[in-house]
Image 1 (cartoon, rainbow, N blue to C red):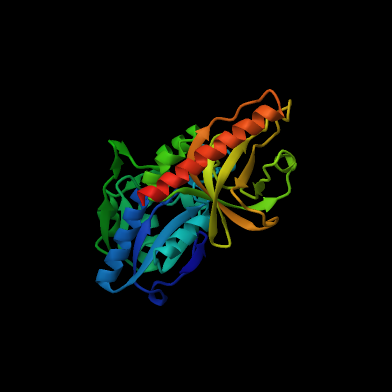
Image 2: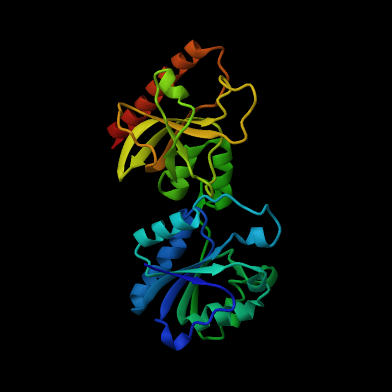
Length: 318
């Protein structure tokens, strides 16, 4: 997959570009609704005998338009999004720099410059996709703005138990720690990628060595608590338990940021500085303060038993 970064105004020449079937959207989460849009574009590309493409935007529009903070943590940061798109066989990923100039494009200018002039023969987007200044262009106005220069397909909303599958719903579940609920929206476990960094070594001192996962900036982290997880190291996944939290048993003063500590079952290898993937399966319990080390150790053993039973149940159901 070729990744092409564009900044407004771009200087690509239509006649020099391959014909495309393109999916449009921010696609944070790459959930099943997003996948439906993207795979529709790919199917149409195959039918037309053209290349498949996805257009996304960076940073998140809300950062530029002032609705949120200067930084928004993502369900799938750009690098993760690109990896998932490559896995699905997409030929081109266009990443458009979302800045003030780009946001001020009139809807018809966006269509002309970023669809027609990129040699897009067919465009696919979700029913709620909007474009142009103030989001005034919608899939209902696409026909008017495309002026028969390209075809388009609107993908209707996908629902789960009567609720729209959306990034907003996934964020809500992450804030509540309901990672099990997220699996059916994504079609996979929620994952984050980070690196094993040095920690306080508290776990090792009490008999439960942990991998402290850092360098996770950009990802939305589930709420504090203890989870059944898998830790991926060099493509191999290992079962374990993870604590996200502030370690109140050891700290009277709440640290600035929570830590992510994974205890892998029956694992002895040194993995400091290794790039790792945390795959979130199930919330076991909320984080709480214990009366002492003995009570904490007893609870961790219980957490391990519960996580092991969960993974055993997955294997028996397979």
